[in-house]
Length: 170
Image (cartoon, rainbow, N blue to C red):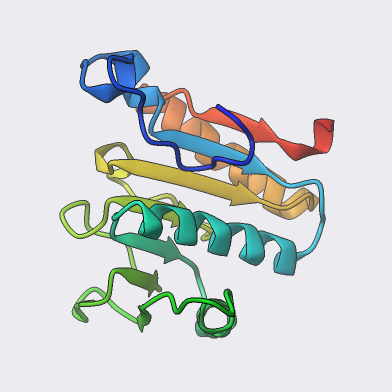
């Protein structure tokens, strides 16, 4: 998968295009490790993933841990593209519904509500294996990388082998 296509559409006839099995399942999970070591770089990468998935017609959410982080992502999505607005809203809890195609969640996402889930939180959703697409994004910071390794191990325990895009190796 090319690095500039972080949320690909399956090629017709490819295993991910409709065949079931482990290969298809693993095509839906990505682990992005950024070369930069700043939270701002991580947020920007997540916004790019949101834009790509939303442009492909997915309902997309970013899962984060704090209202401050949600507000940073909210500001970023409002100003992400000078040519287009990404319709989104902040979802503070599981009781709040989101009618926009993009949500910034401070609660676990429900698989029935979201096609693509981008994890920036310390906790991986318990049902992480039930989403159409899931991306973990880590910037090159020791604490964030340790958290991401934990998420990676949890996905493996669910039988998922995420595709790793390590930008530090460029």
